[in-house]
Length: 317
Image 1 (cartoon, rainbow, N blue to C red):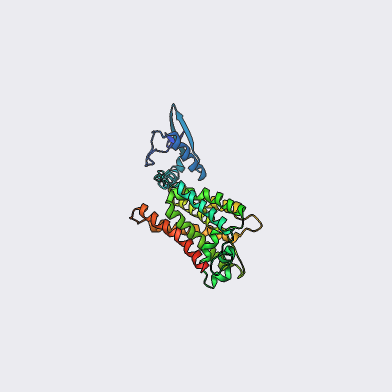
Image 2: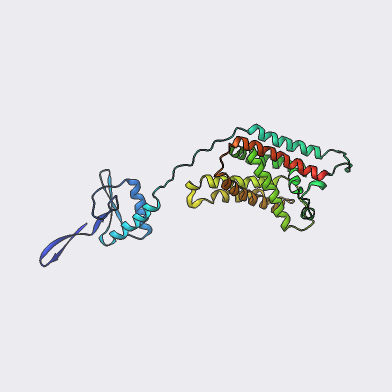
């Protein structure tokens, strides 16, 4: 839009609206911008309450602002373009998943077999028969008095078929994914660690006579691990929304981990927190790790089997 003003009887043409140059450089421009950029720039200027309008000439577009707002508009758009210079970021490198579904399933089969063993009348020296729950539950007072193995043995015990089945189904969903991402060795090593550490934290806040059993502490450790892994893997895309995987996991914890008459909410919560902590620690440690993960996974798989066996050996002697 143009207007005419008179200065000393001389008519001067004055522009009321001027176009924003696509390159955001000083000086007027009649070049056009893309429709996508036009929409973004309009939203930016509107959010800053800077008047603007667009003009279409055939298939081409221009963004215009009042003369007195030209510099402010350019400054705001330059700032916007700098902040979004590499946006959207490229997707993260696709994960190479491990083919270990069968081995993961076998672990859950062994857990079920062990539960059936604990239901049998088995006699060994000093135990007629073995009271598995009494020997292996996470008894706060006894753990604080030095029976640390209960932090692990408690993860292998279940109160009945329903308790066992729910943990196998829920745990299987998360462990299958976690094992495919990290490899069986790393995944089980971290999950057992999250379960044991979660039981330890729970012990520190419970009364001396508190007792608990079940793999659910480790299951929610797996939930925390998966949430952390996804948060770190997709942080370039999530950007300011990086807590979304953790928020989703917290919702799952609230939905599945805080219901039921005999639910140990503290164990679930601390297992989840331990999973997050170990996930962050593992990511920091492995950033500069050069050894082949195949050999490392085998070593960690061996340790993951040794820990519960050693814990039960200490409980039985």
